[in-house]
Length: 510
Image 1: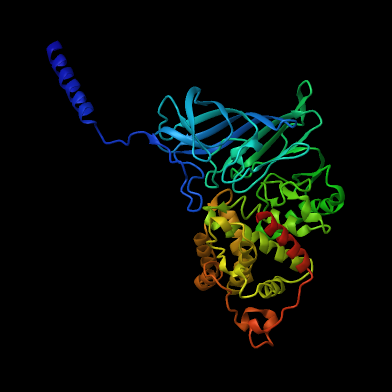
Image 2: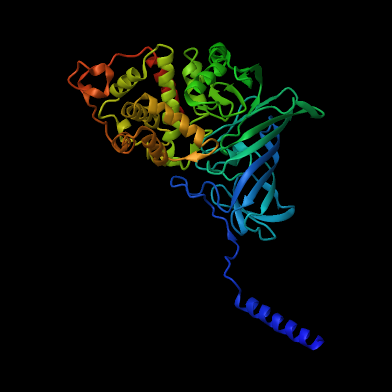
């Protein structure tokens, strides 16, 4: 018996060895994650090989020197067998650990931090990546500029499509959404604004230093987390839906202070109105931050708490910019573009919310705003050469993406009818909540709901250069006119406000 058992053991061992020698079933060898996520406009943005679920960002900021020290912990899952992966980050890095092990790292290209863990990360394995860093963000240039803004009383980390590189390492593309915690240690008497809710009140931590904490509970893009550090008045309230409202105003607003407050304090009202059109507000808090003049120059729809340049209020209050940025909470923040050539799904729809607000407040119907906008841009204006559905990487924030983009939406609405149009908006944001989408998918949904072939509308208004011709029937106000092109549209009451808003947007992108 013992001899028979021994012979069977030897045979089995030999068979196992033979399998090992010939390699067994074919398996892919561990490989580096891609240095880009595949965006057609920005091919080196984001990274392949892993998916992030959460960022824990803990930094200390020294306003007198603009120095930022930090530790960011990234929770992720490998999507392939990894022997190397990239993070998007430009600050000097002291150390990187992966699942507790010290990892080697080198900097490559414009903004790539290449990390080599000491052990292979298997597909579907959880990854805890801890990055320690120390630098002066305003000293660093990437993508041709410095997105971090140093101010007289602190700093601003606000930008699109790039900002995370200057203050926390990330997989920087809208396709990889995550939740985040932001914790910032600053000198006593300095305020810190960021996204979401405050899980705890600011509290002393070191002698002369206070820690501010913010938490975002819903997944967002990596350019959504922001910092506004400096001297701010913070105003707290409760929205009609019971959510926390936190608004903040730089103490250096000067003559902009009152019109800014008259605008931003309407945020809860605007969100309530937009919820009636688009469906329930998708996030856990509301608010806005107005920064000092001569700093960022633009407004940005930071998730839960948009940020506004003081210059939007130079002519007085401006609820339209509040409508625009909060419209992005649905179109842009909750449902985000799949690639940057889908930017129309952000800016066109936020602009169209302005037109609907104009109609709601009796300052001109959406049709009247369309008519005057169409007339405003002469056929020879290069404005018409930018295609909102594919503007090119240099033009993702061109005014045509906003204005012609909104005109495209209005033509789609006319083709579909109001019932199908508004059902499409609500269905899109509900079915893709906290996800992504592209223009083709949006068109397919609109056609499914309306039963109308929208190819001609989308091709003409989104993908064809030149000023589109309008039939007389395209305008309700053109009934007595031989053609829409021949008539003269009346200026809606909202036009001066809309033009001022979009002139500021255009100036900030130039």
